[in-house]
Length: 453
Image (cartoon, rainbow, N blue to C red; front, top):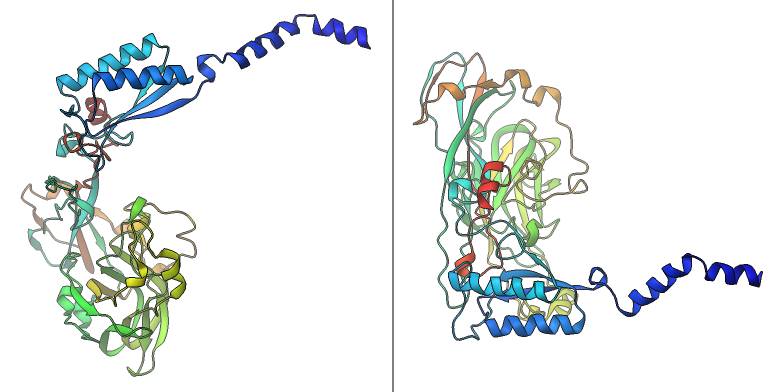
């Protein structure tokens, strides 16, 4: 046994063991760690580059990933090197040559900021886009002749919701370019039992503030009115009173603070604080559904049909939570929760009740925000008679003139003419220095992507 073992140790395999031992003591470059090397807000010098890379080499680092970035980093050099200026390029060449001479692997980000593909050289027409639309209702059997309303050209996340212009400390907020182009015009026949809120003409009342049916249903997500908050533990409300019982299948709600947030994960009222309720007499109400804030400024919720003469949206003002106050008090970025003040209320821009089913949370399913399958679980299925028939969709794109003018006689029934276009999302590369910040290139257009690089 011992003889066989010693023979094995002295065979060809022993060379592998010696190689492993040697490389363990003196690791090859492929086994050495890599680090991030951030050039922050133009604070770059040739001396600093040389000192950094020589230190990496001495420390046993095998390479680096270079980012040109910028947050609120103060200027600590005599002259900032602005991204892609001749001075910056000269410094970058020095870094590349020195890294090669020190056997340091060098990798670079796809753009200034956090490894994205954007910059000030991206033209608006080549930037990331989203669908926008306008709707025109027409009666079948009657000729229609007119200009279809322009869809919003606003740069932002959804319809006419614009981007928040943010400025770094001591700097002006950057201007946000706009771009719009038409994409298609389609018409579809509405279900026979469809009635708009304007046709039903409910009386609108509220616990406070001033609301009108026309402004709550005009599709403008920016113009809004304040619904003052109720005392803690109580609910404020907006109520629709119909002339008789109506069956409602879905609700669309939009308010300031209803969407967005870090990584598109939403912000606004907690789940359960907004509800839709129904009543026959205007005194005793039954909850129909929670109106859960989504990740888009507008949210459409479909539910089991509910019938009543009165419908109201309620917004509960939560009781103060000592546990939450203690947990978040003094947390950086969140302020001091012990200094909470009573909320003023919520700004409501849209509140629409639908007499036929809608695609539940269509705004998120259409890709206007990040969403998971779990988020969309338990979506109700509308009745077939309340759905739009695919065979009823008519393509009118070729019939609309460049100025939006359309002549068309629809078949019998009620029809929606949808003018579809696209505008910019406004997404920019970040965090980058002001001079290196610009629009993200349209990832769905290979010509634009190749041109970017």
